[in-house]
Image 1 (cartoon, one colour):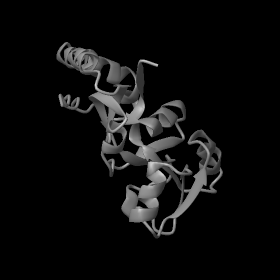
Image 2: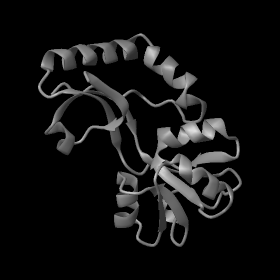
Image 3: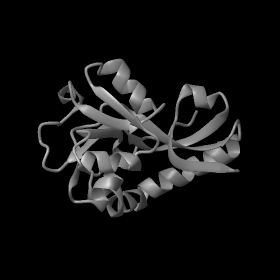
Image 4: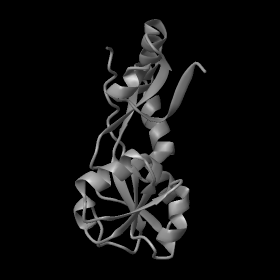
Length: 173
């Protein structure tokens, strides 16, 4: 495998094993609710609420550590959280905003709520210390930003649900 392009957060632990180009987007943990549920607007509204997330995930750990009054309901995948949300078993789903935007884009009954409450810089993973390739990918990311391609791609995809952000500055470590 040469590169990993996914919802792959750049962090110090991962940098011990691989290198990263980017970031190409800064996601953040958010909430997805039924569009009719306006009582949940952010994590401060989760006390006593049932919130679905993936077992063992960073969003699960964040909810357990920082929002202890939330009833965390773990599942194996985020898509498995959709039926319990729709039938009222859970009040919200929590993970990165761009993942939740995909569910909301496919189903008008669902809505991403509030502002992200973590910072998750997504990068492109590549072989440890492959500086030449990393710099080339970073050059391409900056070119896509400069010529408007990054914004155009955003607006065709996640931008149908989420506002268009400024692309993050590439980290040329």
